[in-house]
Length: 99
Image (cartoon, rainbow, N blue to C red; front, top):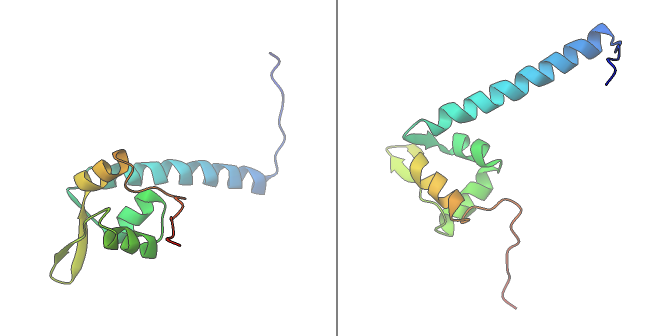
């Protein structure tokens, strides 16, 4: 395979580097979140790539459990991972309506 010379402008190079660094940092943050015993609703939504209203809907449907500590709402990381493995939390899942 031949090596090819690629020419980028300074702005293109900066954008490429920024995208790569952002991707790596995002993966590192998710790893840090998984290592905690309890995580916030925002961290859970970010981990699942869903919005806070969707997370709230999953809690109302008893797919996940949210614990209240004073004014804070937290989720157990272990239970969240178990819910993912059991397919209780599915992004892009279609809701079945009763007719």
